[in-house]
Image (tube, rainbow, N blue to C red; front, side):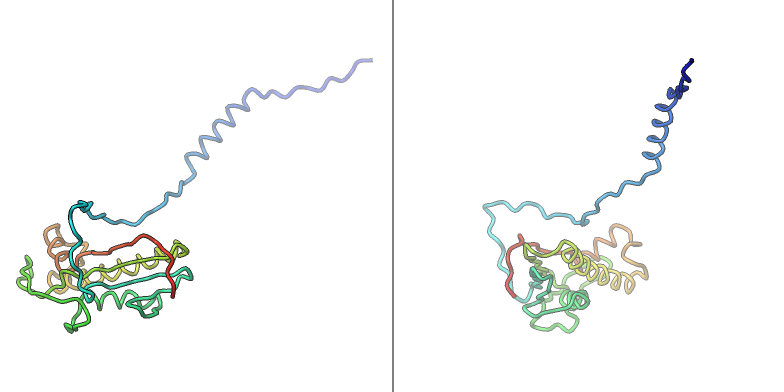
Length: 190
C-alpha cells in the first residue's frame, strides 16, 4: 500500500514577498516627529556679570501650579484671559504706572515712538505642571506677542508681520521684543 505523500508548498518566493511588504510599509508609513518650541535662547551671561536691576513694574509674572492653575501678577487667571493680559502689559496703551515704563526711542520706519524696552515676561511652572498646560501657556504668551506685532505691522505697513522684509521685521521686534524669562520648575504654592 502506497502512502499518499502530502505535496510540499514551494516557499521560495515567500522571502521576496515579505521583503516587498516590508518595503511597502516603510515607504507608506508616516513617522510622527515631535515638535518643540521655536525659541531663540539668549546668550550665556558671563559669571562675572551682575544681573541688571529689575523694576517690579517691568516684570509680568506668570506662575503655573501643580494643579495647572494660573497665577498672573499674584491673581488667579483663566487661560483664556492670559493673551489679552499679556498684550495689555506689553503695550501699556494708557501709560499706567503699574505697567512697564515707556521711553521715547527712534525706531527705523516708525520714527520716535514710546516703547517699553525693559518689559519682561517671567514664566515659572511647578514640577507637577502637565506638559500640555505648559505648552498652552507658552502658546498664549507667543500669541500675544504675535498679535501685537501684526497690529503694528498692519498700521505701519498694511501687511502682516510675516509678510514684512527682514529690516521691517527687525524694526517691529524693537518695539515688541520677545523677552520671556523661564525659571527652573519648582514647587509653587497657591
